Length: 309
Image: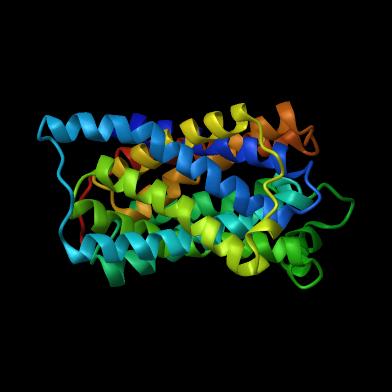
């Protein structure tokens, strides 16, 4: 059951980022368009979830949270997620998924330390090994196909950080989730997954609007990029599914394990990039690496959800 929850959330967020990539590559102002897209799709996600929450509230299955800890953690997660997605959208607007994806491998190892400090969670030795396998696989499957020797190719993404700001944006997008997912777990623990998802989507949408207006110093300078109704509703629906399932998953797994499992979205993005974005360089190698990640995903899903200090 837990594996299906994580798999569903991972697939939904992968399709959402495909929507975003296809849309943003057509825009003249990617910075403003990324914030506009983030705002409208998250607000739409909140509207998708709200009737469900109201029905559950009337049935006395959920309540409005009164704990200050819930709201504080939620606001911190919104800030971290907004920063991560803004950097991710900026990177996608000028670089391919394959060029920025290697740095997604930074998040799972970082989450081990964060979980120990924030939640007191300690993955098993086998769990740590699988997390590192996922991190290394993400990095290796996205190395560029060149005639250079392997040691040179291994350093290419790192060297690109100092030459290309859009690659740096890709790295910056991978850091906030390591802390964010731990705070999500704390916040959901103070309420429930559905209530958290509704609050997250609405606050993310409003936050993106405010951030765009602040950056531009005038709301009229925020570029919406004219997203179609299908982009708004479709992207919002995918975000609604991802937000709820990912929130629910925090109660089923240790944070480091869940972080690595959620990075299986990289394997999905390899296939989506090949199908829709014509990113076919080294596809065989990427596919093999993706299979390794998916095997690690299943094994991590079978790990017991308990801390072992």
